[in-house]
Length: 326
Image 1 (cartoon, rainbow, N blue to C red):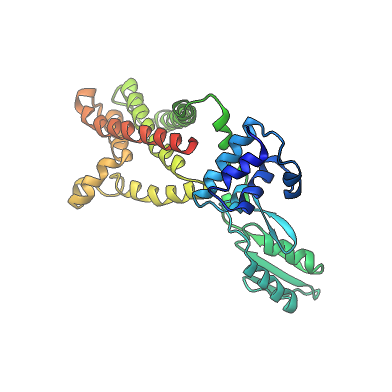
Image 2: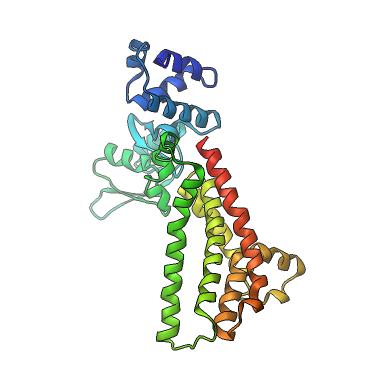
């Protein structure tokens, strides 16, 4: 029977009782005392699946604060996610020091012309330090700044838990993959079309080759690139991780594309590495078709690495989605 007592007993085999009770209370939006008083109540299937997902994620090492989306700090609740650091008890010591001296460690403070304390919290994250100081020092002027878009906008798909809701839908991982891939492919082709029209009719650069072959090359290149992007997306737990992986990857891809340095002039090891770079072959296809009028018989070899890359990254992304969902 799917009672609260049975669900907690099963979870206690994997987690401490306090954490299991906290996660179940979060799912049901009930305090711990209510769970104890109603442990014989039945648990709905959707709530049970969501609770099981949270238990699995906690067992995998994800902090409870990230799972429930908030953390107590200085007597107040603050929203947190994997995009920000979890407030710690040691951080409260910084607030105590700031209250004692009206100057925080980690938050820069100075007196304004009016005599009020001005506090600047750089890298505010959850905002626990800045908000607490603003509430505790009423006359202070507090400014909180963060350069991370993911930290400033906590509402992301995984961070909101909407990804977990896919568990209770009839969608298969392949259907989810197609749903995520098609918009990116269409947007990529739309951007390519805009650039093509600007080059052709604004700069009036004549096209020597076939428009159909050009778009065929663009489609294959876009599919391969989207496969790489979906693999990164499936591998990342947060938007911040995805952005970091993308930034780490995009510069090597640009440098190894042949845009700045001809591939033939690169060391042999780097030349081999360029075969995993869709940008290299996408640029070569566009350049040769548009400027040189090359036909399919001239550039068919350029399609092979792109097709291999798409055939590798798309199944990899599907496998990662499948494991995320399970």
